[in-house]
Image 1 (tube, rainbow, N blue to C red):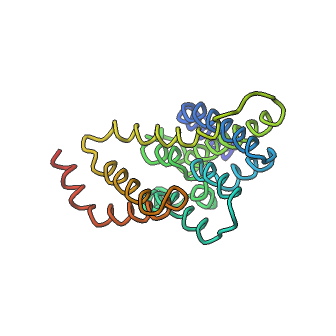
Image 2 (cartoon, rainbow, N blue to C red; image 1 turned 120 degrees about the vertical axis):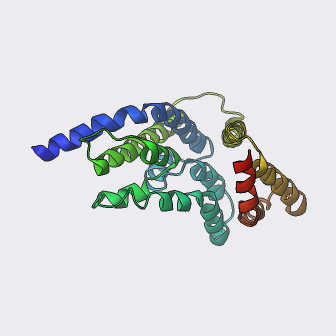
Image 3 (tube, rainbow, N blue to C red; image 1 turned 90 degrees about the vertical axis):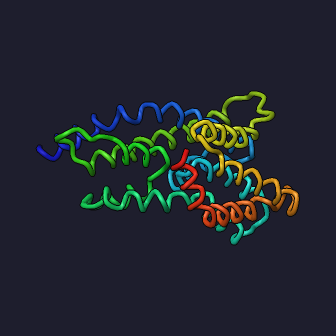
Length: 236
């Protein structure tokens, strides 16, 4: 009985933190599911991919990967680079995930940007089990994305409407992320590095092959210039 009360309290405490995520995940999930359907895939694909991959930007990119020629090495490198930020998230959460038992495995698997942000910064109320709180934050966010993507795949197959230009949603999503990051920063060193590297690689490698060289170039430049960038940020 005590264990059930502990779980219920953790769920009630975690749910309000995830409400803003619900709106964003459902909208993007619906769009992703419809996009998959427009690209020729049944609703089973977004349903299974949202459940097992659970990486929004990667899942959008995966559509093009599935439609392209078989290239396992390129797919592996692209996936690693897109999701590489989770390496740093994981390091930051090492202490917080201690003593969470079996839940630790799901917390690692289900850690997305939004779940990391909540679990890292939330002030968990006194008397609420930390492990269960973080578990429900992660689970609820996962369910929002899963149900949105699945519903989008189903609606895409049932409704008949003009979907011309829907494939632009991925480009629009990354533009919005870039602009949001630009507005948050006082100095735009990292953004300018990204723009410069993208432009140079686009010219050198062409539109069909510039993505991986761009990401490698950005990773290299940010690693080499990390200390000057950090010092400039502190000075600002």
